[in-house]
Length: 212
Image 1 (cartoon, rainbow, N blue to C red):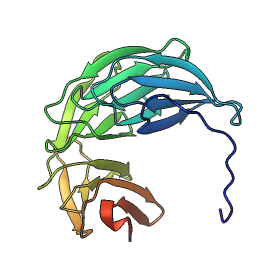
Image 2: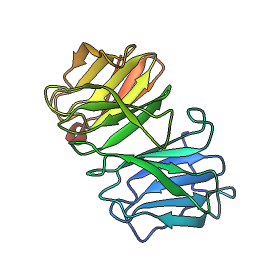
Image 3: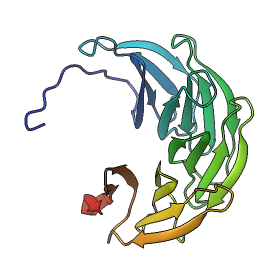
């Protein structure tokens, strides 16, 4: 870690704002240009496999093979809400369904059979994704400010809540979410990742905050 080395790279003609690996591939979110699949089986020479869909403003992606038995990508797609894509054949992906939302989908995290979507001012929207052709509403959490980033672990949702900082929500019952804690990060909490006992919050102009 003290001396990272570049192994390979893939240059897109579009802006890449989200990435999620699956098997020997990665799915890229490319804002208004849709979603791209790249073969990274040889990381020194990534190869373009497929570009598909026209997005409103895809921001984040997550891939999971355990929820529905197949390989599906879940995209936080701005004004389009949640977009679900079948990736069983990486060369021929196709959209199975979309779930429209009232806000602007910025981030997504898959936990159990739920997709937790950070939907801006509309908060966290929790969607049951067991049927990738028919996602259904399960519950929500609306912070004081907005939901920009989301990470879920051990029945707790960690929400990057803008000016409100980091908010922790009990989602053990997704139909009845309960806020249990908050930490003011001083600036604007935009993204969050949890590892071990620490939450790492992207706090825009204040950099990264590490919270116990």
